[in-house]
Each structure stands twice: as C-alpha cells, then as structure tokens.
Length: 125
Image (cartoon, rainbow, N blue to C red; front, side, top):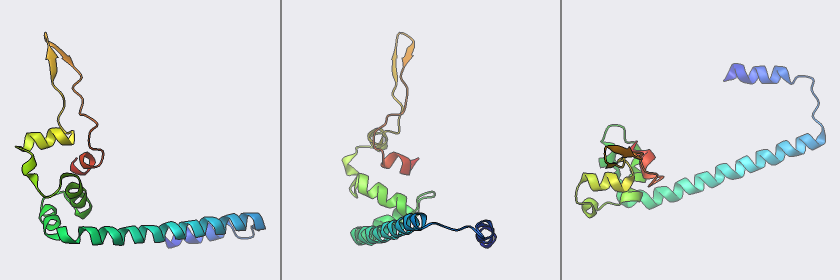
C-alpha cells in the first residue's frame, strides 16, 4: 500500500486543484465519514440484538464453512426452533435449495433452483 500511495502522490505533484473540485472532494469525504459512522452504529445494534443467541451462534460456527455472519443470517431466517420443519428436506425446500422435478411423458420441465430466501440461500451455499 505504501508504494501505491507514493505513486499517487508522485502522479499529482504540481497539479493544482480548483476550489470547486476541492469542495466536491470534501463533500465526498464527509459523506464517507457519515456512512462509516452509520455502519459502526448498525454493527453495535446488531451485536446487541444477537447477544442472547451467542450459544446458538457458536454452535453454528463449529460447522465447517459457517462464520459468525452466516450463523447470524441462519438464525435470523430460520430461528432457533428447527422443529417447525419435519425433516431436513422440508428445510431445504423452504430455503429454495432443491431443484424442482416436473416430469411428464418423459419430458423434463424447469428444474431450476428456486429464487426463494434471498438471504438464507447465499449463506448456506
């Protein structure tokens, strides 16, 4: 990163920024600062919301390939009571992970994976 910063400084050496450009750059910088603060606030709020579920999150994180973000997504979409699904096939169908099997007279129709659960499916895949 240091070499890139030096290259940028060398490339703008002697270039004069007019006041309008400087004003726009300051506006973009202040907006970026606002967005970063909003993200920090949102992260703190999420941390407070998931605190009661830390045991469930750590248990899900013990599964290979599941990190904390994925575990939070899984719990927020499915919940902690998995008994609402009679077996794993029902959960997979609900999450949109199983392709349809529409076959009639030896003609296969639309065997795509459904578009259901836009948050859960990417976390599981």
